[in-house]
Length: 101
Image (cartoon, rainbow, N blue to C red):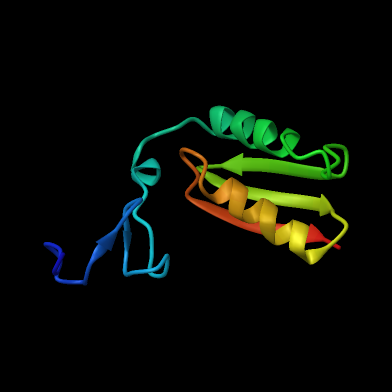
């Protein structure tokens, strides 16, 4: 493959630099303008996809594309998982994980 146009190394599948899943991803979602309301709706839908998460104990607020997750979950593993799930949603600029275990 060789170097990409930025000279950073090989660009792997899925828009990530590096090889074997390492490196970083470039997401066009971060550059599109999404309303905070649409982001919040997407976050709630994503959280509802996971039955191990009680929507009564996990809350999400969005301001200028920054999602703040708060509430209580059963483990740090679930907290980290939810942060990763929300981070890739369209329009999300940043996730502040304030979930308690």
